[in-house]
Length: 333
Ligand SMILES: NC(=O)c1ccc[n+]([C@@H]2O[C@H](COP(=O)([O-])OP(=O)(O)OC[C@H]3O[C@@H](n4cnc5c(N)ncnc54)[C@H](OP(=O)(O)O)[C@@H]3O)[C@@H](O)[C@H]2O)c1
Image (tube, rainbow, N blue to C red; front, side, top):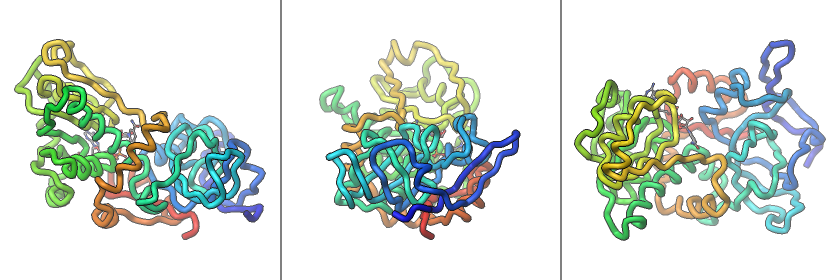
């Protein structure tokens, strides 16, 4: 590699926060034992918080953000990875505590990486990115009901925050798995979009607001919840006996005010999803399933490819809820 490379650098000096596109020296890459030339990264909600002001997540400045990336191995101290291997990184506090993916190069711990499945490529994997990986983890958590209950079928599945990154990809995956997907959205103009992804039915977000009874009519065999808050309280009350609720997000709030009733009367299961710390074997499994479950032509139709300049123009829109679709970041654009 040349000794200098381009990166987005955030800084916080004398309480003045800045973000710049800079040439930095390779000596800044101190952590890890695998050097990767980055092909793509993606823009996630967490990245937008970090780009805004560090998001109370980044503590050391100056810093290179970007919580996921794909690229080619340049040098490796670990025999598991050799030069030119295509690799994927999501989470493990990269882009939070270790320099991340909004750069032309990154150096990371080999235990954080998996190889890009041969059915995919480095662009496709970042079209999914952390959002898609999380959606896959959630979908397989819902599907696990069939294995746990020895053949009981999952039929009706609810997805909240359905037009978001995780929600949209979850709708696509779960309908491909053969389930009837009910998509919850606050966006009235996105019905056609959600139907095109495979949703059978669209529900207004308002239906999940307000107080819920201890138990309501059981409707859902499985739920992928990206919003949390009062909606999740209602969802527990509406989940069928032995249904699985995969909870991954807090777009609608962090507090839930539930009772034990759904859990002890109906055996409802709450399955928390933390994509950042998912074990490597789980990562390899779900990434290897992606090519069977994702329609990449559809995904491409709502993915934009951004340069670093465009990334810095786009992240505020994501925070205001004004950005729609997936955003991948090309450090060489
Ligand atoms: N646990 C993990 O490992 C993990 C990984 C990735 C993301 N996440 C979390 O998952 C959530 C979704 O991530 P994302 O990348 O899909 O975000 P996103 O693209 O911003 O989508 C969030 C969606 O939630 C809905 N929403 C927004 N504000 C809401 C509100 N006040 N009440 C109810 N719904 C609201 C909107 O969908 P509609 O307009 O269609 O309703 C929005 O599109 C975030 O909380 C994120 O932090 C967690």
